Image (cartoon, rainbow, N blue to C red):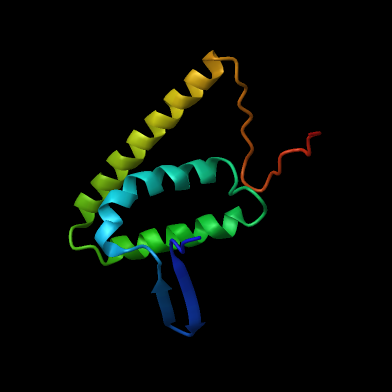
Length: 117
């Protein structure tokens, strides 16, 4: 198990970050990690604390943009990258449904019903 990102609040205004990801391999890991995180958010993330988790992810994104050297360029990059991911997800869903699969969407905080094995 690797720690993708740990954010710890030690006290007032004392926030520390840690990761097990090797910076030398970061560029190679980002595309796969983005895909894995997206799939997790589509499936396993929903379990009760997703509202708080998503809020903290947004806090980190806002802080990142606040200290960004070129905010507009960063926003454009985030917009283009997330749009490409949306398109890939939509295409995967279409292909899955065309092959006979069924997709059921659950809103944040809504647990899927227990199913028999």
